[in-house]
Amino acid sequence: MPPAGDNRNFKSLCLTGFMGTGKSTVARLLARQISWHYVDLDKRIAERAGMDISEIFSHHGEAAFREMEHEELGRIFGEGIEQGKRCVVALGGGTIAQPRNLARLRENGAVLVWLHCPVEELLKRCARITNRPLFRDEASFRRLYAERLPFYEQADYRVESNIEPLRVVEQILALGILERVPA
Image (cartoon, rainbow, N blue to C red; front, side):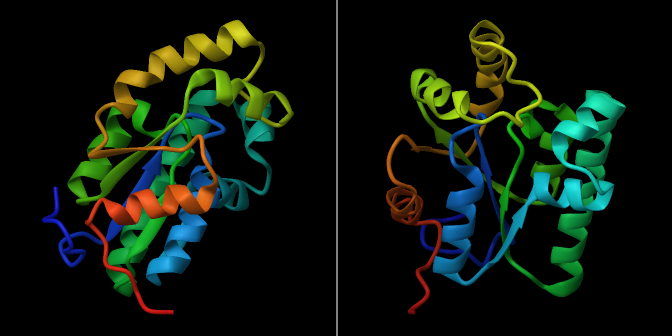
């Protein structure tokens, strides 16, 4: 874990958490606030595949998606090293539940921040979204949440995300692991 207030020791901060926690929104806002590069892992996978995530799941299955996810994660770290970019990465909801992805994150010195949100709030948020390939019904949603919880708990930090995204960013900044960049 990096020392408080010193962001020179790591090149990437990765946001993890279940679907609906706000990873993409918070990562984009945080990256802008600290002047780091923003990367959305699922978006990168979709762009590379030429189809959205739900299409990848329906046409190729979850195993193929997880392979793409692992490869794209490697590309993100490779680009960061090659280009000297520090980045805030919005991981997919199941990224760190894959042992080799978690190992890759650790090997690359990524700091993991878990955006925690009560499952009841997540159900409300995700009920309105129709393109989540692993959200079939409430029972399977709760089961998947319970399965992934032990992986999220392995993150370096936990912040609550059942509030406005800018307040989530403030919580991450308050951890003392990043320096604010003057506007």
